[in-house]
Image 1 (spheres, one colour):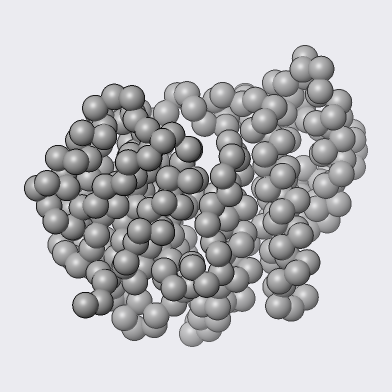
Image 2 (cartoon, helix red, strand yellow):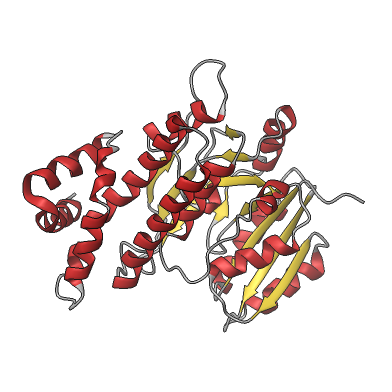
Length: 329
C-alpha cells in the first residue's frame, strides 16, 4: 500500500503543557490522510508518556523515543521514519489554527506537484498577545518558474527560513540529502532553507498563515544570545556559500542566493554587541569583516542601510550602532 499524503514531524522535548494542543491541531485536520510522527527527544517530563497515549488512541500517530540529540536530529529521525508524499514540520509548543490547512495544500500540489510549498505564520507572545502575521505573496502574472517565485519572495523578505513554514516532497528531500545539520544552535533553518532554494526545481506559494508560533521570552537567538549562536550563523553562511559555488544553476540564480545570505548576514549586526565584553569579541568582529562583501548584494532597504553604515563608520562601529537601533526599535 502507498503511504499517506502527509507526514507531519514534531520533535518533542519537555513540552507536556503544550503538547496536547499541538497534536490536536494536526489530528483534527479535515484532511485525514496523514501520519503524525512524534519524536520524543529524551524528554525529562511527562511528554514521552503523552506521546504514547496519543498513539494508542489514533493509529495515524507514530512515536519515536530517542536519547536527547537536539531538534535537528529529532527532525532527521522523523524524516527517516516518514512514509508520506509531503513532509511538514511543527514545533511541539506551537500549533496550527486552521483545520482545513492540509486540505488547501492538497489542492495546490494536486494541480502542480511541486517540490516545495511555502506558507506563512502568525506570531504571538507567550501571554497570548498578538505580534504580527507574515504571509508570502505569489508573483504577479502567469510565470510560476522557480526563479520568478524566489525573486518575489526574496525581494519582499518573504522567503522565511523557518522549517515550519514549508511543505516538501519527501522524495525530493531524500534525493537531495536535505537533512538538518546536527549541533548548530542557530542558523540551522537558514542553512537548510538555503539548500532548498538551490536544489528545488519548483516552488509554490500558499497565501495562508495557519501556523501559530508562540514566541518565548527565553531560548531564542535574540533573547539568549551567546557566542556560539553567532558563530553558528557564520558557519551556516560559510556552508551556504560553498554550496552555492557548487550547485548554482545560473548567474541570475546565484545572485538571488547571495542576496538571501546578504540579508542573513546584515541582520547579525544587531546581535553581536551584547558580547562586547567577551574575550573573543575581536574574533567575532573579524568574522563580520570576512563576509562584509556580501553587503554588495543589497537588494532590499535593510541590507542597503547596513551597507551604508558599514561604509561610513566601519564594521566595528556598525555593530554597536545597529545593536542600539534594534533595542530602541
